[in-house]
Image (tube, rainbow, N blue to C red):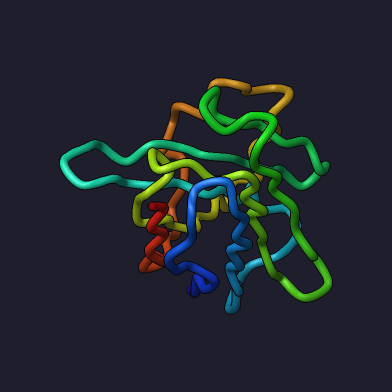
Length: 129
């Protein structure tokens, strides 16, 4: 069993920064592909950024150049640095894990394959005004 707990959300002004964290515990290791997803009110959940066991990252077009995903394999923590934020970044942000350890280089379309992620956190709210 894998547990993912997000933290770091909150309210921030446009142009500011925020760092989300996701603490992973249980039967998880550094081979997992990890990712951040978000869901805004009235919209479908979408991928924001992914990082695989090789450190390869993939970003949604709307956040590339503003957000940065990283992972601390020793502590099993996933991060999302958001800077600068925009009002359209307002959403519930979810941490997710893919236990198959997908390589982003071998399957770049995983950014659009949410179903590949079999463990999910409960989310942390980000509000940008």
